[in-house]
Image (tube, rainbow, N blue to C red; front, side, top):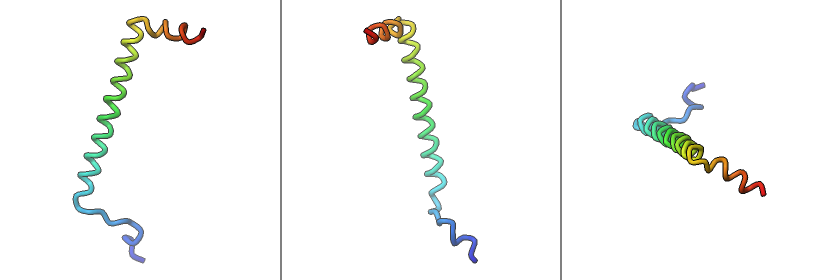
Length: 58
C-alpha cells in the first residue's frame, strides 16, 4: 500500500499561506484580548462597572 495514498497532496505554496493565516489569526486574537482588558479597565476606573449592575437589578 502506498503511504501517500491517505495523505492529501498540498500545493507548494500552501505552508506559507497557512503560516500567514495562523499569524493573522493570533494577531487578531491578541488585539481582541487587549481591547477587552482596556475596556474592562476603563469601566472599572470610571465607576460604571459598579453603577450598571445596580441599574439592571431593579
